Image (cartoon, rainbow, N blue to C red; front, side, top):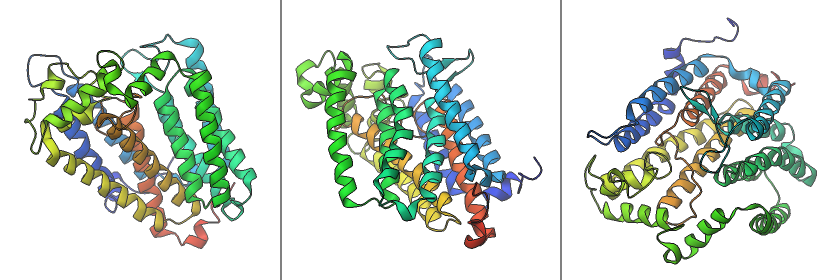
Length: 378
């Protein structure tokens, strides 16, 4: 263990403090939004605990020598564990709101898809870092797609369409940054269109089709499948320029907007903070993503760069889909927004991912790129 520890938490944080402070700011904005400021039960106290645990996870990961993640056996073991947990989820848990997505561990619940995102990003980073000069060979697209399909299909069976879409975007984004050819890109897009048609016909449940139909024509079922999307757009619009004030969101606090602490926290925040608040949140996300891109450009190895870009793609996918749903631009799929939505497993994983990047970035400054490329290549 002593070989893994490189620096104390505060020294590890010194150079990459934006990776912690920006998420903390976003997290506390989420806490303010989900707290009712009244006698009603609040999830805010529990969320503060998760934020504390997430901060500790960041500091631990940032303090450890994370170069062992470059090892193929480590990554493949993690991938196998994730596959096993997702399979166990389907046979050993009961459906909650129609989906088997969580292990109920009493004091908290674990969604295996959350840590699987980081493992999958590490797997793709390792795969393409060793084959970036051969990305023109379509075989590598197929093999990487097979790794992605193993996770995506199990998640679709739960069923969790939103998370499956997130994994698909991460895979597609990582092959894009790896340098895919235009011809192969056209093949993938065509295949995705065919797969979407098959998904609609054979895989989607009736309620999922209804959500998509209500997205295309929200007025078709405003009291049914289109209700959530309609209430979300009302909440966003009613915030106007400066918002109604913290704790005064009528759509959320009066429960017209369901799941306002998780799936629709962006709409709830927009109602209370207005357009000015939206600009604030998007600016914070933009600063965080810009920092990740900066770190990726200065990475010591291709793996480090691709892992950092993969995390950036993951965050962008969550932000884009969640905001799009809340603004009525995308069908409702039940997707959280990073750091703001209530929840433990996704918050801890997000902080831990940034801690890993901070550790890799620290090593990039202390080890020449040529030397780093020779380490942990197994």
